[in-house]
Length: 172
Image (cartoon, rainbow, N blue to C red; front, side):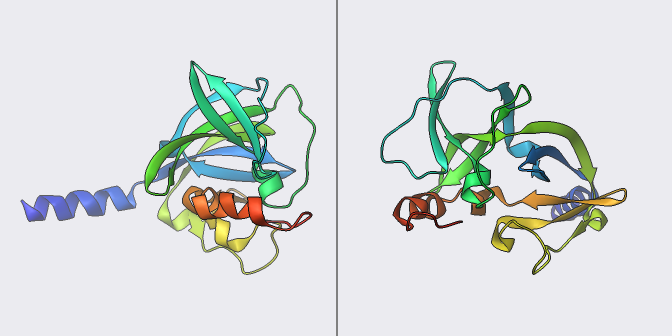
């Protein structure tokens, strides 16, 4: 029985993982597809007083209250205008050990990528506008690289709540 488990684990590790590519302030990012619940059109956001600037407010998702995070603001990439391609990527993140549904504001969603272990490089120490601690790696897709976000780091409770206490004008 242990042999089957070891064989299954080795097979799963070698299989490519799927990522959803999306655009944010001119950069292409990707999140593991297994973390994404759905993608919805941009809908009006209800502002909630006292939230950090990166938490835009909440939306009504079929009767559920879902907080919306603007990763561009969180990463210091600046505000963008809402276009017809702007959407919410609904994800599940662990906040204080509890699975929480969050909406991520994306400028557009582009494609589903299949990336194997050999297609993923460690994040560079410099050269990206995104803080390195938010990256899982760089996905190689033909002649370009895509920034792979570490959702649990980007959306950790400490990170989100820390934004509320950060001095005004501070980045990530």
